[in-house]
Length: 482
Image 1 (cartoon, rainbow, N blue to C red):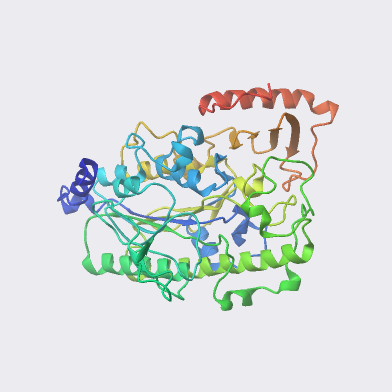
Image 2 (image 1 turned 90 degrees about the horizontal axis):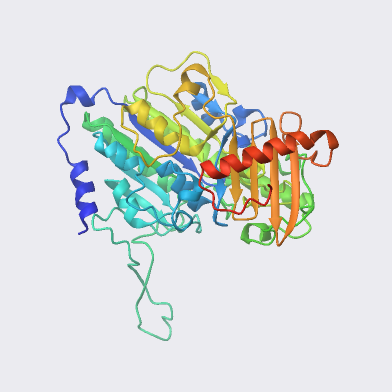
């Protein structure tokens, strides 16, 4: 057994000071959706989704309408995004696009373990298994990977030795051979949807905490694979929508107007070229139904916390790992730096009595800011390795913690925004393209103002800021916009 595994297990089993001390620490529940863009929580007032449970959670906390990821260095944007979330690191300081989280990049789980928390994970994990075991003391129903059939997900429970090798026996050529081969996962709940499996395990964990009456606080990480495609869900969730009534976004296009560097990646071939209104409407219909499925189960998890008597003393964070185009700008995926791809849902419900007035904030933030925020909310020292900024000033006083956000996709797309003005620069096979949008007047990024003479000074200023952000975030890209 590796030394780090032994140390991690030891931290989980510490007797922890005294019950009087640990009783004051709030529990933490982090719920992460997959491919859910920031405008799909109905309470945000943008899209006609049916999310009453998330809306209710937002009423007890703060809904962030300008939360973003930094982009991605891989077409599988989920991988770097989840690594950034768990470490609080800038995009370009990750190892191997986030596939590996090295020991020097401390995870949320490690920080909380050192402060007396038990850490438990359910659902998707898109990074290396060694980091997984450092982050968590225990786990159930874990899927290691990016995407899979929601109805037949290969799952593992926690292995203290960190060995998650393929171990599910199968005879592939059973009519011709006796050869036994091994597939990923220990078990499969065939015919049971991933959202329902993960939600059930979360509720069972919460029930056990309530029944045990333990004074040890917990960090429960619940990572859904939905609403990521394949876009399938129990049929009942389609009943919230009428296919013919689904509204196409104002920036629907049959095709993207120029080569952005990733027009033929996997996500983009989910719909035919050129895009048709009928096909995109069907995708949105399925996408929204998947979101409503997640919403219903989140409501049941919140109900379980209340029934266990621990809702008030639990911090709840609901977020998404990245957005998704689904027809906007002629795109289907998340391999861009448009708002539909980098803006994500974020709700933070603090511990304690709920506020009588639900709050929304448009202050800029990254998902990496959740790490130091959780540390401050739980009295946990912030590791030196974390790059994020605590959102407590936003939560308590609605004061900004960031003036600009910087985005990148691979090496050929970069953007900077102050929340009103957004500059995007492309360099695809030597071809330069510049876009400038006023997000306050043009939230769907439809009117490119880069060609207007009166915007030259603004573009120069934003390019200079982009270069400063490039340096601050340790982005190695050649600064082709200077």
